[in-house]
Length: 444
Ligand code: GDP
Image (cartoon, rainbow, N blue to C red):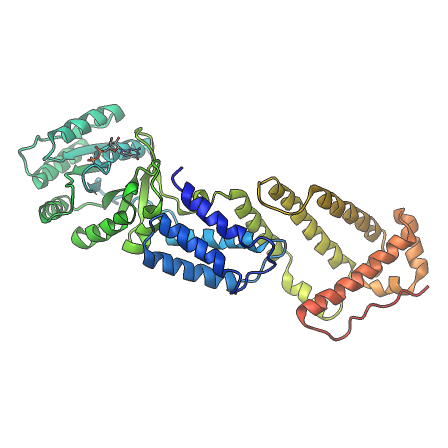
C-alpha cells in the first residue's frame, strides 16, 4: 500500500497521546517528532515538513478540546485538515475552453507514463460525453507514436500522427486544424520526453505551446520519484508555464511524498492521478480523500466531525449564560446528558476499531441505563419544577410524587436533584465563576 509506511509512522504519534486529557505544548512534542519523521521518511521535502509541523502544533495547542473527543483523536483530525490544505484543499478541475476545442498539452520526462496518460485522459473525457482527438508528438521514439495509435484504437479515439520527420510544432498546427475540421471538443497532444530536463526539450515545448495556445498544460510526473516530482513541476512551470500536474503510478509502492509536496512546492495543483496500468485508471485528485487514505482512520474523522456538530447545535453560548446565572435547570440537564449519551453511542462504534476507545460496552450500557432512569423522572416533573429545581430541593412531597409517578424510589429522585446542583457547581467552577451555587441541603 502506497502510504503504508507513512500511515504507521503517524500512528505512533497518536499512540503517544493515549491517556492524556488535553493537548498541551509539552505533550505534543513527542507526537510532533513522530509526525515529522514519518513525513521525512515519506520523502516530503524538509521545508514543507517544517511548515506543516509548525501549523499542526499551533492548531493543536490553540484549539480547545471538543467534548467527548480524546486528544489523540483531535490530533488526527487536525493533521487531516492540514494535509488537505497542504495538497491544495479543493479538487482542482480541468478547465475547458469557452469556444472552440479545449486544447490539452502534455509534457513530462521519458517513462513517466505520458503516452499512457494521453489515452487515459481521452477515455476519461469521453466518458463525460466529450469527443476527443489525440495528437502524436513524440517524434523521437517511433515506438511512442505506434503505442499511441494502438491505445487510441483501444479507447476508440482518433489519433493524428505525421510520422517522425515533421517538427513537433508543425504536427501541433496540423493536428489542431484536423481537430477543428472534425469539430472535436478536446484535443490532447502527447509530446516527447527526455531522460532529463534539457534545453532542447524546453525549447521544443515552448514552440509547441505557441503553436497550440493550449487551455491546459499538464506536466505528467511519476509518484515514484518522490521529492523530485515536486521539483520538476516547479522547473517546468518556470520554463514553459504549466496549469497543473498529473501524477502517475500512485498504485505503486512509492512513499507518497510527491503527492503531498507538489502543490506546496510549485504552487501548481495536481489535477489528476493515475492509479494503474488500465485505461480506466485515471481519476481526479481529491486532497480530502487522499488525506483520509493516508491516515486510514475514516471512522475517527467522521466521529470528530459529528462531535463538533453536536457542540455547535447545542448553542453553547446560551448554555453558558444559564450556568453563569445559576439557571441550569432540568431541561438543560436533559439536553446535556442526551448529548453525552449520543457521544456514548459513537464511542461504541469507535470501540470496535482496534486500538481506539477505552470505553467498555458495559460502561456504555450502564450510562444508557441511568439516562433512561433520569429521563423517566424528569418526564413526570411539571414545567415549573423543571425550570426551578429548588422547588424539588425544598419539598419532600414533590419528590415523593415524582417517585410514585415515575416508578422510582424517593432516594433516586433525591439523587437526581442532588446531581443537578452538583452539576451546576461543577460547571460554574469550570467557567471560573465561583459566586453562589452552593448545593442546597434537601429539606425533609
Ligand atoms: P512515457 O514514456 O512517459 O510515454 O511513458 P509510457 O506511457 O510509455 O508509460 C511507461 C510505463 O509506465 C508503461 O509500462 C505504463 O504501463 C506504466 N504506467 C503508466 N501509468 C501508470 C500508472 O498509473 N500505474 C502503473 N502501475 N503503471 C503505469
